[in-house]
Image 1 (cartoon, one colour):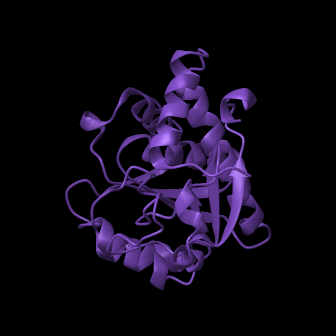
Image 2: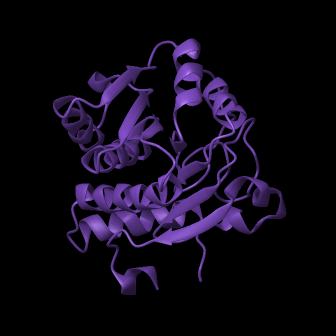
Length: 220
């Protein structure tokens, strides 16, 4: 299968939206649903609680969609979000508002990381969903994300990463100061070039390539 750089994937997304007329909310919905399915496989028979770490931008929005699908199936997601709703783009915000209305547990980490609450939650959950950073990461991971990643890695829980393990450079496979160790990475649309690098192998886990409704001829 082909692999792409972060810039190539960005252009593919843009063409899907602007040339093929596929609303970005549909791409986000399919991305979140694919990640929810992989999360459900890890949860099978192991409990109801899941921690979902949602960063800024569309990657965080994908995480909100994951949380909604898990809640709709009777699971109990705890969402740690790292961007104020006042600063969210329309698509992530729409999915965040849905979580508010269906009473999903939402913990604000946009100003300070509540380390005690994160540690307590990670002791109770069975699976962690990593939706902190997408493919656009180009500088070393700073706080509070660095501490959040460390806590995820120390938890001993299986991790599903949305598109790419947070902290991994999509093009080079380099660890940008800190990186989530994923059990499963759900690559959205196509795998990323960095996955092929030897240094990335211990972070990406099993890679699942998800169809998020990008037209086949565009991917080819």
